[in-house]
Length: 243
Image (cartoon, rainbow, N blue to C red; front, side, top):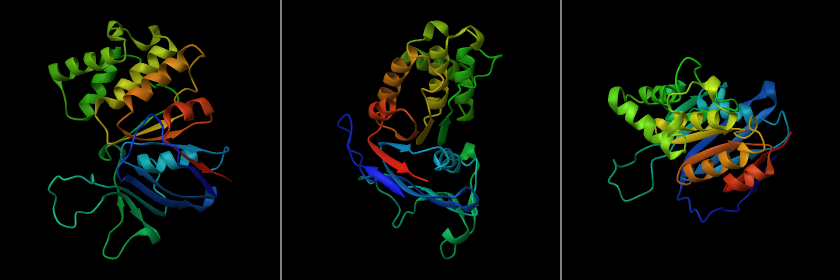
């Protein structure tokens, strides 16, 4: 069963579906169908085992169920486009394949989707700037441009002065901000957030939450959270997955 609350936060007005997904994982007892509008943050909530983490894994391409379809839709604007332009297929398998289609399972790095995990998972041997530059290199940006953009991103998050520090010297909140900068460095079409405040202390959580609300204001995002405060602060809409 799915419950949706259509409350829109912060005055945002998403215009049309951007991400659509449908899949089933019978061995986990999970069956999900959802659509996320362009520029909105959709919160997935529900008890443990209801399919929240499974959904993020399917969207990110870390899990490809036997029956699944995940697609990104082009913007509904005035930009001239080829007649009959179709959504970009990320995953298509099993019974959800359409006539004439072949199975599709794009790897994570080709999806234009980034997943921000609970733990920052920064590279310990790299500086803060080096970690962000790694995200830029995945987008094909290297050299001086990558270094300049990494410093700029860290500056937007208020930690440019920590650019030469390694993760072991950073607090939990500082690590979280570096991880956010790295995730957004490649300018993904969709951001997936898995309990972004779970690993933070009470002092850091509100600050990071505020930064995320600002940075995600115009991005398409899927948020998994058990925190009502986090859902209230970040989400435009709630999609509840029940066992």
